[in-house]
Length: 310
Image 1 (cartoon, one colour):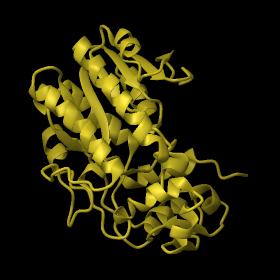
Image 2 (cartoon, one colour; image 1 turned 90 degrees about the vertical axis):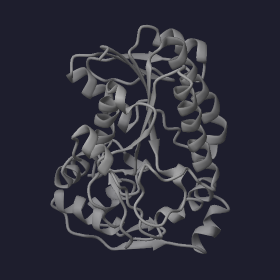
Image 3 (tube, one colour; image 1 turned 180 degrees about the horizontal axis):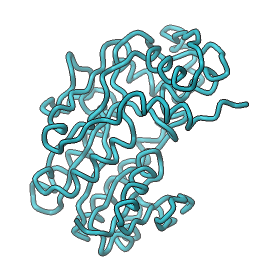
Image 4 (tube, rainbow, N blue to C red; image 1 turned 120 degrees about the vertical axis):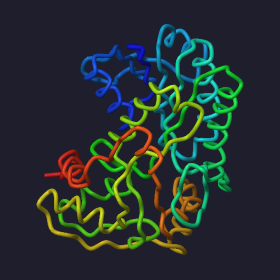
């Protein structure tokens, strides 16, 4: 595997990936708009990754270009993602770097039964169609021999550093103080949660395996838990008792979303929470021999990675 890596994005996956690559002795550059990603042993670079020419210069001589970007504001996805995705793909094509994409499950849309890689990308909401189009463009370029591309898809993240972007970690600080919390849509439906560390491990494995390119892989993840169960498990790992878990449902959510734009975006994804949302990761387990981080360990690291406000 080439020893130079360019990681775009320093969220939970990007930072964890950079740490893993540095630990393996690789030369790593982490690109963010501010250049403030402080990963020991890695170089930080301030760059607008939607500038294809600038990103190409940064990627010259790089063996793998990792797309770990994740614009946090759902309301801006339609504006931010298209030029960013285009620039990332162009830089990989121009430099010959393997293009390893951090994806999600949005492209599938509502499904019946566990999600596996053979399902069509049939999303009906704007965010799901956008993410599906990103992978479709990369897969087409791969099939045409213009780039070597692979995408890994995990479910909702849980772990240190996820913070307000995670459904469990968003409410964890209050729960650690013993306060009741409110989750969105449902608290009693089985849902797969994915550790960013496991996303990073699969990104590395898929990027370095030529036989894995040109397709989607699902991140090995622990058995599903409901939102209430997952939160209770993390609290137990912190030595704290369970708390009361309320649910914000429609029509209350509909009313609030009139003045909170991001909730309007979230409502389009309510199907992920008001029914079972389960990831089938058997293919990646077989092909790469990977297993998820043990759930108890995920819960401990989540509990200790989020301040309790005291």
